[in-house]
Length: 357
Image 1 (cartoon, rainbow, N blue to C red):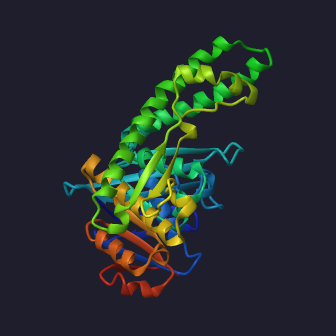
Image 2: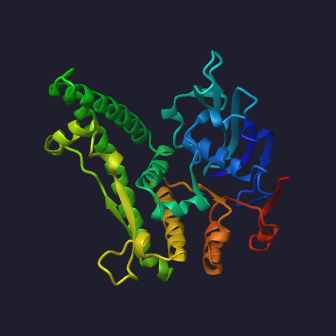
Image 3: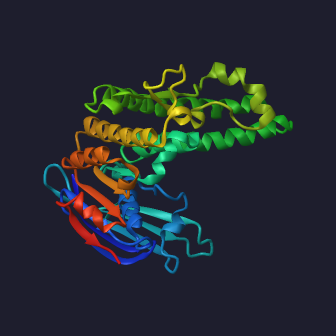
């Protein structure tokens, strides 16, 4: 699969933009503020239905307009052309922060269920370093990012889980204040348990795949890396045991919204091999590269289709050896790089160059 053409209308800083891509290597060059990352964000949005940078959909629309359109032509592995599009439209009745979203295939509106999975991407960006030493929230977002663009069941389960969690937390306050009874929690408990199981199964499958990928990788440094999943198990017994604490705090203390994982490196002789505590900046950067490579491997093996790789100014984050590793990997995929450094042409001399001003 590859992206042939991208048309942006009113997306962030791009009022009108037409871009055509080579099936293999592409290099977008431009100064800071020229909208390079915005282009990658739009491509990612086409795959996942959400941004990797902002949770606010209204901010994706050019501030002077009420809608944005991101349209693309993609060529699938059967060499068939498909046109896909996502439209974001602000509410015109007064609340400009309310945005509706439309998914289209061949100009025909589809449900998100029918749209998900038609186009897949993997994004590398400098902020990925937070996957190692940042908050658990960032690591959970990474896991969601994998599946929200590929699995309708995951997207649906996550939406239902978050809705049930909100209602359960509100109900805990009411039970504590004597306005509701404990029995009213049962429905929301069962909804959480059912959807948490779906989400956890997908997450476990990724960690199993990633650790196998690392242990069999030809790069000796990547071979030392592993992921340690810390699931927050949710079931009836555990909810009952923690009920008094939930009641006291007014929020649910366990569940997939408390999941986490850590990066280990066997170089360390300590019992705790967590890169967040012991790793150098270089080791942490390599771990981030490794998990993105594992994501590519997982998507390709699971769905038998090559994702489009989006690399946002990452060469400055890698040493020369691992720059070569990335360039070597990218020969097998359509890859779109961004950089503010014209010298990057020397590393990617085979790439189609797209110059922004």
